[in-house]
Structures are given as structure tokens and as C-alpha cells.
Amino acid sequence: MFSMIDSSSPDSRPGQRPGRSVHLPVRGWHYHLTVWGEVSLITPERPALVLCHGWMDVGTSFQFLVDALAALEGPTRCIIAPDWRGYGRTQGPACDNYWFPDYLGDLEALLHHPELGLPANLPIDLLGHSMGGNVAMMYAGIRPQRIRRLINLEGFGMPASRPEQAPARLAQWLDALATPQYLKSYASLADVAERLCHNNPRLSRARAEWLAPHWATQREDGRWHLLSDPAHKRIGAQLYRVEEVLACWRHITAPVLWMDGDLTDTRQWWGDRYPRSEFEQRLSHVPHVKRHRLSPCGHMLHHDQPEAVAAHLLDFLQAPADQLASRG
Image 1 (cartoon, one colour):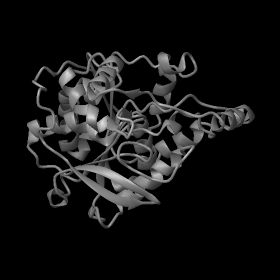
Image 2 (spheres, helix red, strand yellow):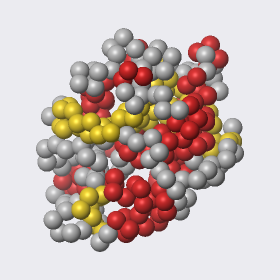
Image 3 (cartoon, rainbow, N blue to C red):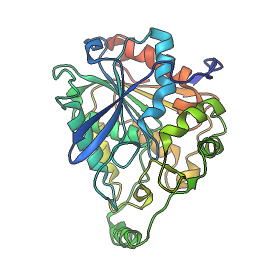
Image 4 (spheres, rainbow, N blue to C red):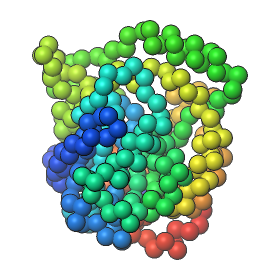
């Protein structure tokens, strides 16, 4: 289904529903979360909405989606967006490698954190973008009772691997550990904003300028450095075991909303190693999936079309459960 919802509303003042920073100890890390609204807003019909960002992104990157939701329903929903370990303003020990299961462990710890105060007896609504979508899908299959609604924004997963690839993959990983990783720094916030616009031509200058101080920080050298650990760029040691992933996906009980952009071309990431037809076959393992394709839109749906994402998201969150109990 293609969506042509108008996204031409002014974005000259991003952050119209301001969030606040919350810092929590989580599994040896000092986690930073952006929180919009109070826990007192949570009800069974309007549970907490947890937003999981993608690779080389930050939680505050969802601000435009939060603004668009507030424009539709008012500031009446408690929304929480963590910065994953190694991203944003979350801080922890020096690390040369990141392991995917740690994101699951961190999410579990956050949802049960007494200082965050989420009601233990109520499930949440969980949204993830890209890598965050992969985390959300896995978590929803592992802890199905914790999720009321699940939203995946282009969390495709990865190309399938074979056991015989393990020796070469581990050799690559060992070589990568010996190779220092760096991220480019910038002379000014304006240069950071320019980088964001270069990466995504559909991102407006106003939004890029708003994002820049959340994506980068000025250090002692006077330059602006991206708030992402360069170690995230290293190849991981783990193979992508798609059979294990699908075993988790089959345990998802929450209705699922899948959204993608018409301009996304997965071949730029994986070539022919992971065609869209293979992803469609994987998604067929998930019960109760609704789909929307946004146009014009690329991989950064929450930047390209936040108003359209918000409209479909709100319809999905407010729909009676019996209307969602079918494959879309």
C-alpha cells in the first residue's frame, strides 16, 4: 500500500513537544533517554511508546515524529527513546566491539527499571527503526507478553549466513580489532548539518540544524565529533543466524505495522546477497502484519515523512485489536 499523506507542514520549529533527558544506570552503562510526557499519562489504551533508533543514530532523532504525533492527538502520550550503548549521550566503559544481544538485555533492563517507573502489569507499544526495528522484532518474540503493538520501520535484518562462513568471519573480526576506527569530525555545527543533508537530500535544512547538536558534541580540540562510538563500524564476530531470528519472529503475538519507503534500495547495502523477495518470505512468518509504503521516502522514514508515519502509527495504535488480527 502506497501512502501519499501530505508532509508539507512547516518544520521550521522542530521540537514543538520538547523532551527531557533522563539518565539511568543500566547493566554497567549510564543510559541516556529522551522522554516526552510523564508516566502518569500511561493507560491500558494508551501505554508507553518506546522508540528504538537505528545504527549511527540517536534517540532524539525521533523528535519530528513525536511532534507530528502531538499535532494529531495532543501531548497526551508518554514516549521514551533511549540512546543505545555506544550512541548519543549514553556513556559506558571503553569498548572495541558491540554484541547484538546486549541491546535486548538493555531494553529489558530499561523496561523494568524502577527509576523509569513503567507499570509492570501493562504491555508497551514498541517501535524500532532499522537496527532498532531488528531489536524490537526479536524482543517482541522473546517477551511477547510485554508488547501490545509492534512497529517496524525498515528493520530488514541481515543477509543469511552459513556455519562454514564462521572461520573467515572470525578472522575478519580479529583483523578489525587490530585496526583503529575513526569518524570524521567537523569544524562547526553548520558542517554537521551539511553532512546530514548530504546523507539524506530529503532532510530539510531546518531539521538538520535542529538535529546537529544532538548528533555531535564539541570536544577539547574545538571540533564537533559525532556521538557514535567508531567501534560500531567494525564487523561483528557473530554470524546472522536467520533460523534463530525467524524462530523468535514466529513467537510474536502483537499486531505488527511494517512501514518502508518507496526510494529505499536494499541493493546498495547487500547487493544480491539479500533480495527483497527473501525479506518478504521472512516476514511471512510473522502473524498479523499491516503494511504501508510511504512516498516519496527513503530509509530515514522518521525524517523524510514524520507526518505520514505519525498518521499511520496513530491509526494502528488506536485500532481495536480484533481489526488487526489478520495478515495485511
